[in-house]
Image (cartoon, rainbow, N blue to C red; front, side):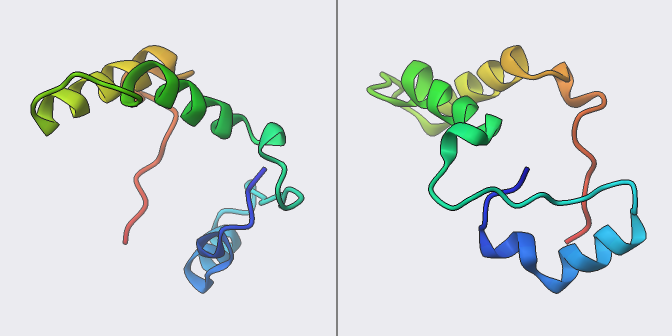
Length: 87
């Protein structure tokens, strides 16, 4: 599912979907974060890492975020989960 963020409706996304027909965007109802699994991931990240962190430097915080995302990912190390999309 996809939220209704405008980038998901851009011409570039439409072209990519046309070139990759095995993918479809299913738009979720507005104001329904409980239907979008990634929203739960962001909430968990915020509650465990970014809220009230004690990092002195940004690189420390980014390292903790990366460790969290790797541990919580269905595809650790980004081996299979995300394809790089040209900008």
